[in-house]
Length: 402
Image (cartoon, rainbow, N blue to C red; front, top):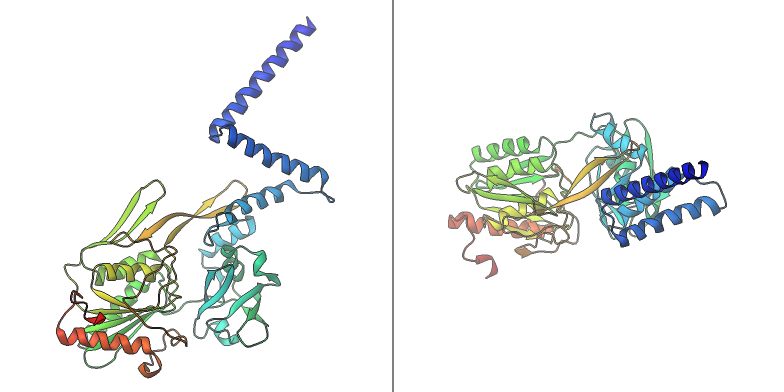
């Protein structure tokens, strides 16, 4: 009788295990190959736990495995956020965290300062556009995923962060900076002469749409007949602000489309009856994200010429996904496309008129217009004046190619 009971218990246990394994395989969408790969993962984890020279915390192994999966995507904008980083990123939305007042770009495994906000901690310490960030708090950049770098540099207002900075022609130098609440104006504008305007957007924050509207109205009241839109060194930012601005200057129709992997599409449109002014857009290699979306829409609609250099090429959408261990994923889930269906991501916006600039343009909000030392601006003024004098908005005669 005992043998029969044991046999029944064994059989029930075997069936239960099989059903559980089958359910796991179903939930994880595992076929034979996927199941084999999952087995490899668990085998490696067990071998490390049982044989590594020191005792290993399984939670850290799992965190490292998830981080490795995200890093293997080769996407600098996707990152695994361990509990501390995830908590910090969420806390930043309350306004309790600050920064050092710089914008950064991530390319080829490196981190470069794109622009420095006037009167911010970085500006006062002497950081410059073009500086390379080599380490954060003593940790080399090579050991940090690109998406983590900005999170590590930001932090609680009043706390310090140490950066190792590399600058061409100089010895590497350590900078100790105190984080502050960074709030800056993002749009500036002025009249170049009695008919040409100039508007500069440094980045796209929550209030940029309203700031742009105010500057545009001021220039209209001053008699503006066309304007230069300077988005050089603009790293992008809040997409909704970009859409707000586009609705003020992009004619009716598609502004941009957001397309996910499964083909699901979200389309943003303008209902502006017609373009009011000829526009010349200035871009450089540090113009990214929202700056590229706005430029691409104006270029595709043939209501603006783009002058300068090919832009950065950041046209992807990230979302923050909470996980089960107070951690999370910041993951790219979609890409942006211009009205004509061009993908920006990894491609950037090609200028209609390419003009190289060896020295960086003026810092943000610096409205000194020295065309003699800024060939991109000089070319923009020349093209805009031609259009204003001709009374044209649409660029259908390719005059700039002649």
